[in-house]
Image (tube, rainbow, N blue to C red; front, top):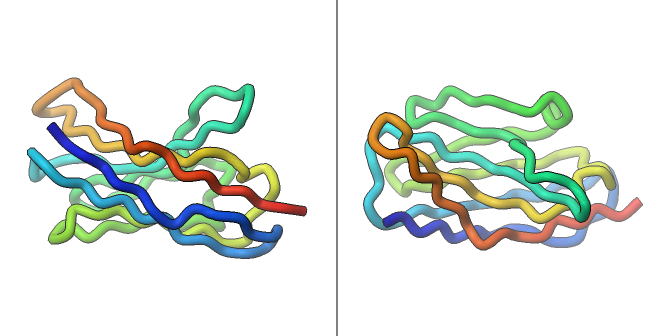
Length: 118
């Protein structure tokens, strides 16, 4: 089992910044992928960014150049620095953990609300 605890959401004006954090605990595999997904009302959950345990990042086209994902493997924590936020970034952001070479199961955090006002 893996538990994910997120923090850092909130309300910000367009053009502002927020930093999300997600700490994983439990049975953490050494080789894994952690990432952030988001879901706005009426929309499907979509990938925002992910990062492998070797540090390789992957970004959705809509956030590339504005968001930066990073991780601290010693703390099993992933971060999402979000700059130049837009109203379209408003959503509930969910942390995700998976270790597909060991298990097909995905783990999810409880979600944190990000609201960007225009």
